[in-house]
Image 1 (spheres, rainbow, N blue to C red):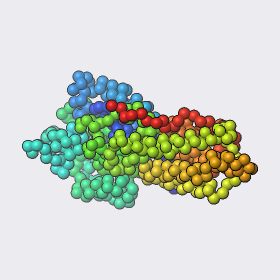
Image 2: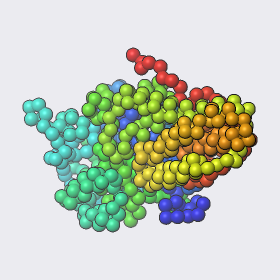
Image 3: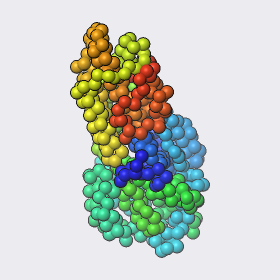
Image 4: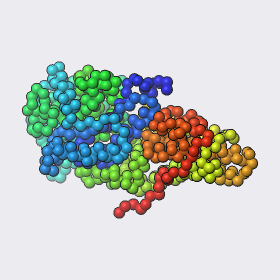
Length: 535
């Protein structure tokens, strides 16, 4: 593959994508899985461009929220974290077929040692000083709140606008990072790199916040001890968000593996929820500037998943488990649905009824039924051996043109713009086109014409449909890897073309790749009919 502005040349900078590292205060829900699946699809796509890719996820295990949750469950914070990570977080990512390259925990020595080194270096440079602070603090956010971040509850009680819980007034002596000095530098970076924060609504929020003037950041806590000790003053622990953000550097080899760090860092894409946008788009780049390190390529904030009009979370009892859905719809359909139905970067509402309707219409009827019909006809008319196309015409050229358009649009939307819904829609528009092609050509009627011309036409129609499905398997492999593999094997593609994972998405439109004579088999139905919704 020739290097272009869009495609990293193999051997060059690794395409590095991160999810947030998730708090282990409870088990993961659909909102966590949405971001992680998006990262998995993005990195699988770039792997199939032939790029070096590194995908990081993990867990954030320090801070007052974790400490209180552990205490409420009668265990130590470390024991609570160990239990949640091994019983909930890691198993879920395995269940959802997440192909992450690393899983970092902030209680690991490879992280905590480097965090201390990073903060000590900032202190030695004069970027950190000691001072006092008093203000409203949300334990759920692990953040001091500004007046604009609060709403009024019953009796005039001030609530966190995100968690709808009362804030606590904290007063303590802390160490501060000189964040206020980085406002002009941040604004200059945003202006020079307009795609640094996405989507546009998130960018505007960040710009407005920084333009109002930044306050210095309290980077230590002295009222509890569950955290990384401040190296020069162990009566303090490092603020959990400073600790957490540094995972993106420590996991990439900061202070431990310079060759890996140079090849990987900074991240090309930080995928985050919009409620933690300011940490990633303001505090994190300011920390990197202070240390003289390069800034990430972009911070992409996804919206909130809504259930019944409320943000999905454990606190309001809408934290649906992904397994509640995968047990009914299947893992691949789950991965497909949320990225297909909800535009990344915008809030989106989930409903069982919408999932079921889309599954039946697009997956079962359009895609799965197409694969079954084509395999069945090749089996019926040619004993399962893929026939040769010798009578191509305008109809076939239209299919080829449609595929070229789908590949180009999907690669741009998914690979560059993080528009997963748009990219998947482009692929399924092509699926609909192939269904329309079969409906118009009516191969079941053409089969009755026993003349040489009739038989040549039948072979051409069925080869065209099978070759179109070959391309669909490649294009949808990042989204639905198990189903794509089943289709790949059904088409007899593995024997003639090699492993599906080795197929380049940008080459999917190269026509005529399925070898004549390939053994086509009708396997299990890709998307079985759904049973009734569980009670």
